Image 1 (cartoon, rainbow, N blue to C red):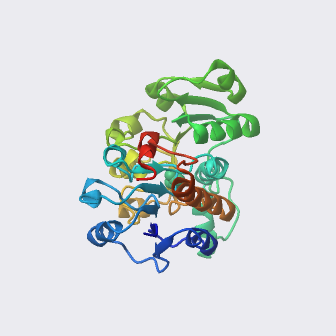
Image 2 (tube, rainbow, N blue to C red):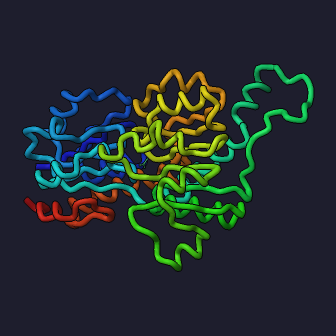
Image 3 (spheres, rainbow, N blue to C red):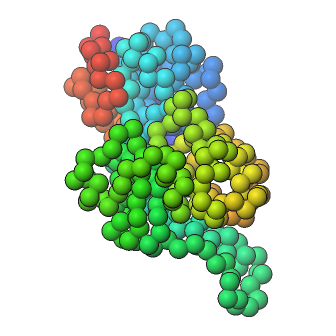
Length: 329
Ligand code: GLV
């Protein structure tokens, strides 16, 4: 029986072609919404699947699926996977780390600068034809160079952001993470480990680069935002569920924060209307890794994982290597 692989979303045609050289491919190039039941039913006839972070693989979708062996996520984050369930079923899960680190850190910095320097807000003003004269305080924002950046989550992307902040912008970098980095790495990044409270209280800009899990839901809520310095900025390039968006909207309405920049939202692709109404918000549609080169590298890495799994019994970036034992069944 030939190997069948589903591709959940539209993808680069050349990557689809690579997959077609090895597998029967069920593709979704039209981008049809794959609602849960149809998704679950079609996956029962597939040996592998290429997903994006918007495609859920949980117990409900996987129920009764005895055929699926590998799920390759085209994202570094994998909170769309129930990893315990996949492992219990012997399904190998993979993600796409490393290839997107620098591009995502670039975007974190772009969002930080856009909100501190009020770039989208002033551009909207200009485009609306409202610019009449120069004023001394025209869209006066906050300093980026020499300011203090707090990074919550100091994995690969957090460290790439810290490197930019320290070496490029002479910023003081504070961070909080499950565990501190080795002293040598801290020195190279000019970064100091502090408690979450201290980070929130001392930073001019707070950036979230944390993995999301249900325990981390609303890790930035009313109490945490209240701790942030008046006039400071919140930037989220991780997952929307980390931030209580209503608490953020409250803080922006009250003028407690100088602004916020979000690439990720609680209910993507819907955006909380209270945030849309805020001028001091910079918002992008989950595009932090979206340079053409990086997205192609991510798609190719996800495809490599599927090809390596079925052809060589290995995977480049496994999340639950224990599931590799099913190869050859
Ligand atoms: C995107 O959000 C990713 O996790 O790669």
